[in-house]
Length: 312
Image (cartoon, rainbow, N blue to C red):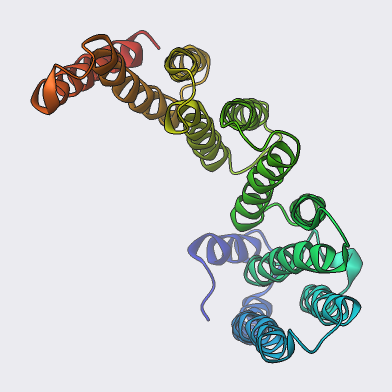
């Protein structure tokens, strides 16, 4: 592989400055180009092997459990899933080149390490749930969330973040359903607060990548805000939460120029206004009027977004 233009210029500059002779420059260039290509090929081979190996381990465990699930005891199922988790973690350490190298592993191998650790977080959830004698879903999701957070702390990639976000949503719903199973309101409010917390942590730079974390937080908050309405809960609470999300996104955009916040605010506004119109008219407005209102709201928020963009 050839050197980058900046590297060639820097190397030639050393020659013109008398640090290197022309022969030495040639020798250095040949040495560098001779070592880069195998390294890149090795990284790609390791990446492919890591993905395939992780998939085979997970698939093999799933096949074994699928065939022998009824024949295995509770501890036997936990042992199979736990062994799969250990195998995935060991594979991640090997691909990274050791425990101490996991946080500084190169780009290509970093993705493999993140994928293997994310799979290990999922199998951790299943292992804990299979080992538990009661509250399996709550215990399993909580253990999976802890493992996902650890994986994200070690290798903070987009995949690790998405795994952590999914585990957090699952855990919140599991705990709320465990103690308040007959109402959609607590779960909706909890998810709304979870989404807002994720967005705030993204704005503070704790969660990365920031755009992905903001988009995920807004989506979770919007989903939570709509739950009371979907579950025959109080309509007013749904409207207040959704409108509050829109205002929070617009307010945050004034301080942080991120398009994701603007889009999230527009989406939340476009969702809540037609819902309010439909409720106030008791459904008499009809689908055509609601669509007209939604289009008008979308145009109005678009114009407002342009104004916010200009004053920023």
